[in-house]
Length: 197
Image 1 (tube, rainbow, N blue to C red):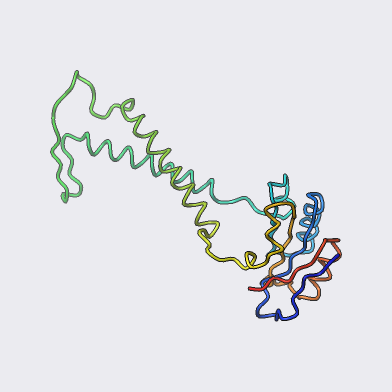
Image 2 (image 1 turned 30 degrees about the vertical axis):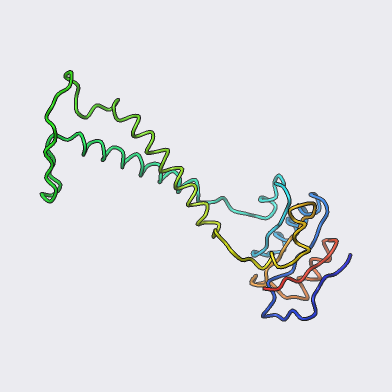
C-alpha cells in the first residue's frame, strides 16, 4: 500500500481521507464496514454503477418520488382548473375577475365533459411531473456544483476510469485523522490519500 498523504494538510484544511481500491468487491465490503463503523459523512466514487453499493453504504431512499407525485397532482389540478375556467360560460372569481364566455353550444355537447379533459390533463400531469423530477434532482443533489475538493486531486481522476475510492469527510462526528487513517488502512486499500479543501 502506498500513501499519498501531504504533510502540509492541517485539520482546518482537511476535507477528508480517501482510500483507493481496485475491485468492486473491495469497495463494496469497504462501504459495508464503514457504514457498520458508524460513519455518516462518507461517499464512494466508482467508474460505473455497483449493484447494491447504496445499500452497503446505508443510503436512505430519496424523497424525489414523493415530490414527483405531488408535482403530477399539481399539474392535474392546474389542467382541470384551466379547462373549467376557459370553458366557463359565466364565472365570478370572488367578484374580482368576472368572466363571460361564449355561450355557444356545439352539437349539444356538455361544456365540462370529462372525456374532453383527458388529453390536457394527461399532458399537464406529465409536464409537471417531468419538471419536478428534473429540478428536484438538481436541487436534492445540490447541482450545479462548480467546485468540489475531490476535483483538486489528480489521483482521484481515475475514479472515472478504473479505480474505486471511499472518502470519509472531516465533518463526520467520528472523524479523527489518525483513527480514520488506521481504519482505512485496515480495509486493505491500494493507497490512503488526504484531501485538501
